[in-house]
Length: 183
Image 1: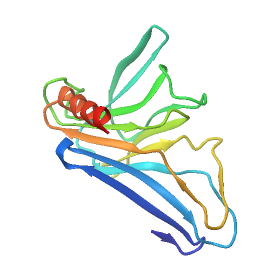
Image 2: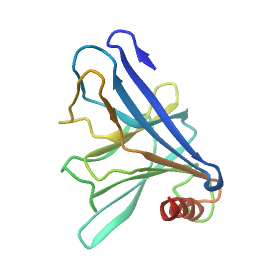
Image 3: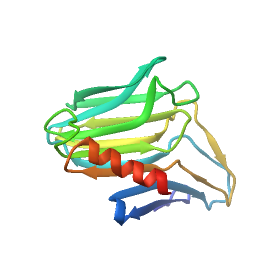
């Protein structure tokens, strides 16, 4: 993609692991202009779909009680989990699950998992609009983010690992683990 006003090129890089049912995506911004450009917002992945009764599950917690599942239905408006403390941590993990028609189940139901491979400030957000469309974004948290690209330079976002299962979160987890162990 090329922005004709700024002459910035954005390449969406997909890596498909067919044997694992996993897709990895990142965005690369290339400054092909003759002037420096400041990147202030760059999502690693965006997922658009019809908002058919989806639930959002995030992993949040605190010291000694890490990674509690917090699930909520996605309704019109914005749902966000983010870290702005300089690092992801036990408070908020850069991982979400979208489950259809019910809160996430270990053994049944359609689930999509998104995991940002990044330990800095991050944002994961889902927005359901007035036309019943769902958009999920995941990437670097844009508050206080600014990266100057000199002419000819490029910036790559962190990768998002995306996975699907029609058999619940256990199958989703196994697919993530197989990828991370063997990659």
